[in-house]
Image (cartoon, rainbow, N blue to C red; front, side):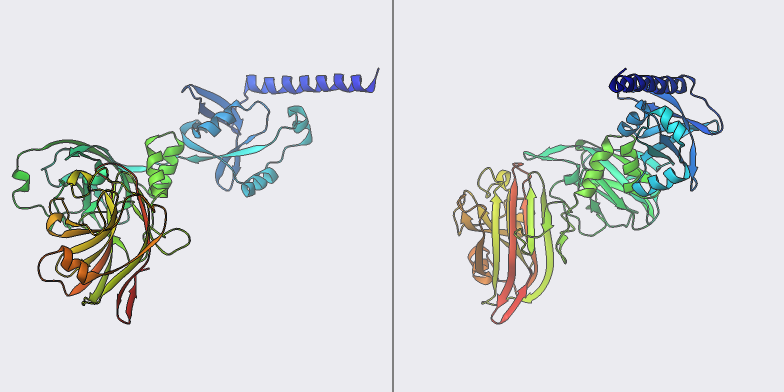
Length: 471
């Protein structure tokens, strides 16, 4: 008989022995003190039990993937939320494939003999750790906001400083053609005197800074509070009811919100994916900048102007945000502002002089008299056009000045230097201010929901030999 034929026969016999050995193990699934039962779930939701040898190491429970039949292991990789029966007690666990270092330790501590590896066909070996799922959520509440004039509502949850929470909001309201999502209208605070904070996204995750009860409110568009705690005008809640349809799911976690959300995501809770993505996508502002507190935070502006240049950039298609850096500079007839800008996308669907088309990006100077003057690029308005803001409340405070027009030059850097007093007196009536108290960067794409993108760099206020650089 030829050697090749002999080898083939031996190989077939060997494979048969492996199949028979594995089949007997799978059929009898011997259980005892050294085993556990794992319950996995397939993609159709059906549960499957499997008896596995239990491995203990450093106070944790593991199992080894020692055999070629490993359907349970594939299900664990697809859905690591499992149930494990240990010493007669069944509980929820998270199945975690171990790291390289952990694998080496376990492989040494729980080595398999040659005969066993021979009978099982020398399969690749893996280990899985079972982490018990603790009670991740300490408290839950559901809050319905169905009246825009209701003021602050108690959420029914008390928190301590350091507690981490996630608020999941849903609903929308249309105002003057613009659709406002929860991130455009909802606010929260801890305690009756805590600072009011807006939802920067529809799902908000944060750590409580103080002890107290959680409160929620829907602030009507165009209303701005006179203080940090969000005090409504006298008689506000007595106004006629304005129906809205918002709701907020509140969760206070036992420990880290990010860790709890990651565990919940592994267990198949789809909503937490968005919460984790929002946390990961949070943009960082340049040092010294903050969002206007009375307008609220968003995730529009980010440090850096591109091309390796220090500065600031915005890129959004359905949000707004104004960031500010405080200054305290004397304003004279010779004070100038110098800046470079690069616009990539202009959001306005019509002339920005109309409220329904008032989407734009700009740089602004804030003055000590409460006014601000903002320079912008407009697709439809001619250069040197200036106009008061068409939005309520802002119409008495903000003035716009167009420096470039059309679409030619989008994507390119341009340098501008403007005499601040000259532009102020050309566009704003009354006595000129005496001091500059801040620089703003403004982005809005809420009305038309079109992309707005621009970067600003080399920003400075200059007066003679004095030069104050922002970037």
